[in-house]
Length: 107
Image 1: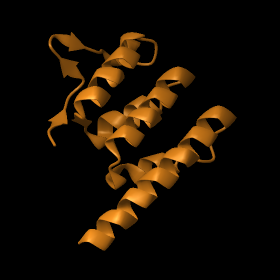
Image 2 (image 1 turned 180 degrees about the horizontal axis):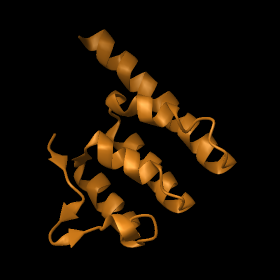
Image 3 (image 1 turned 90 degrees about the vertical axis):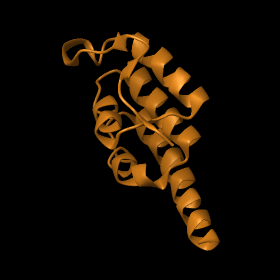
Image 4 (image 1 turned 90 degrees about the horizontal axis):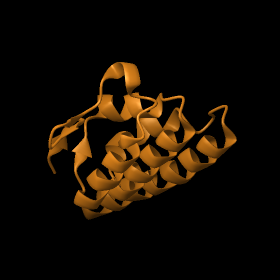
């Protein structure tokens, strides 16, 4: 699976407006549909956003990718101060752990 950058068909996010750009949500939906994988650094940056909707959209994106490599990042949000993000992170953690266990059984 290719690793994407936050640049897609001319769409690029600048660090200064990263957490407030509504286009991030649409970008995550598109990446999810195409199963395009962002780098761990870019996912971590999205999950550090102050925007609750962006953080939740990123967690949903990770559930669609179903890649256990993102577990360390997701685990940091399980005890987040925002209870909605925390609950969503826990659901994502459970799914990614199950994916990791399934992959281990197949190997």
